[in-house]
Amino acid sequence: MKIILNKGYLFLCMFLCFFIPFIPLAHALSSIIMGCLVVAAFFIVEKKQVTKILSSKALIIYIVFFLIICFKSVYAQTFVADFVELRKIGQAGLLAILFSFIKPQGYLKNSFIAGVILSGGITLIRILLHIFETGSLIFYKGDIVAELMMTPRLYLGVFSVIAFIFCAEFYFSVKRNKHKIIYFSTAIFLLLNIFLIASRSAVILVLIALTSILWAKIKPKRRIMTLLIILVVGAAAVLGSYNLSQRFLYVEDNFRESYLEKVKTHEPRYLIWNSALSVFNESDSKISGLGFGKTQQLLRKEYKLIQPERKRNWFLSRDFNTHNQYLDILISTGFLGLALFIVFLGSLFIRAKHSIYNLNLLFVLILFMGIENSFHRIFGVFIFALILSIILKNSTKQSY
Image (cartoon, rainbow, N blue to C red; front, top):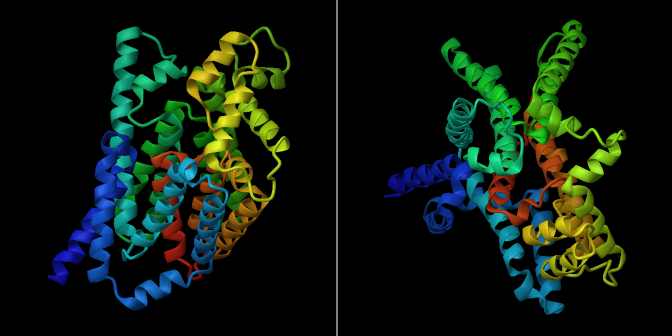
């Protein structure tokens, strides 16, 4: 019976990792599977496994962070308004623990790679059909992108970078040439797909990952030349692709000479972050925070001040959150919450620093949380949990 439960537990964890790019299609299914994993864990996970995972300083700090913001929310009588975000923060930690019981974690990594490849493949087919139907190679704008992407562009891009790091790790660790060819080919597909979908953050992250991994793996005398090749190819790709050049350089804007002015005009996060900072500066609860629910209410008030009217109505209709996890934690839980969260990330760095792959995963997570509220979307919750579980599990020293 225990063997069957073990295999079932492994299958469900692998399915969840495969399903991450498609979670919005059946959100309830992921919650049901998580519930099954919790029940199964009581029967198959040994006490020493639980003790080992829960003894991790990083996880202890995360749990303390979660308990403190929950207690503060109850004390401030904002728990009902904060519940959705609090539940996701707790869910991320619980899921990371459940994933941590899988050994080896190559099962989870390969399942995730397969899911990203499927999502990227469907997106590629949609893009090709769009090009054949319209005769246009231009598809950087939001409304067109929403129709073409199987997974939202930002998330598909970040997922592809993470899958790329997994492929690089397997490529340098497997022995058989046929396996190396499979992972190399998969990594090339992911790399090309990242540039094709024109995800700015993903392009930057994958170039950093590629550079750092090759820097660690190749001979010292080849490092400078490799770095120059990556920079030249990356710059040529950005400048040679209309979608990427528009996303990075706003080449269609001929009215503003200053790049900074173009960013202020075309990048929603500029106004979102300014609005969030205004909320924080006007807050009378800088130490303990306002709560997640009230933060969003005050953001809406700031959006009502945006000019012109067309832009104001667009911001109000989209009801943007802070699009920065650190700002969200700072405003909602105060300096205390943010300090604990930063200490948690620092403890993760200590565990990840012995592996170039884990360091890259952590860097992806840290930068991603700088442009998105990972705890506000189920995509972010699952990817946070997956990366956390990998770093928690793999803390032994590894060669660069």
